[in-house]
Length: 378
Image (cartoon, rainbow, N blue to C red):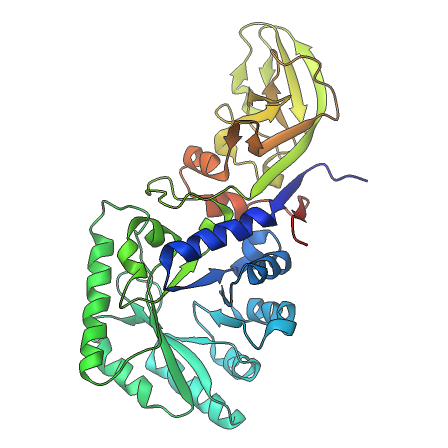
């Protein structure tokens, strides 16, 4: 039986987006970020499609994600790397070293634990040293980082192949904070070089920086990280320099169509009152499926090839929309919640802008009963 709500994932568009990003940042390499089950969309299909497109480096947030990705890429492990980008807890270190995951070093104590675990296992642990240049979340604070990094590189059983940081406001090209972060990181790198320390992989750019601060893909940087851009989404404040394609289409179906008289109120809280007779369709998706409450009375969906305004507050399972000008609408008809419809489109970015958030929030909020349908991969 067909599910009421589904999100279709265009893997061919995903691969084209990856190739565009890779071409844009050449000769820098691209690390595809697939944390949180590829933002809830299904990491297996994403990873395989991106590998087919040429990706050989993948980033996650925590160990279980890393192990799942290793399993998926098992046949490709000789040429594909899996990297944890955030932190690793003490009890997680030994199994991660044993699995060959590239680990973040967020301070000297974690570096010592990784070194000890690698020695115990008679392995060399590959690590990237994380520098906090202004994010204020994880890593070695850039002021005073020089001596700490030097101490880390002296530890046995570590291959300190990389060093990286993360921008707090790269989504806003007008804010000076990102330039300060980039400058502070470059100063640290220059000081490390005077001490004879160089790193094979250096990165600070995520999706927003790739678009808004192209210098983050040029020397001394030689790797970029991309997540949301793979979906064809951008922060609304950014330049959207990359011409990427939307990858996702969220669909549902009409549950009922009714002719309602003037004065009828719609939904919880009676937030919309009809000023004239209208034809109203109730569609089979609500906030449990990922519709943000913020698009109540403000957002649109496509029915019959045309935009239809959402009227009334969105419920958990249903949403009411105006189909007065759409002929022959009936129960079972397809509804495109976001995606392309002819020459028009509604995107997760559009919903995010109304909600005052970003596309990650919209994509990660798609509910568990939304069927994920990946298409386009051979």
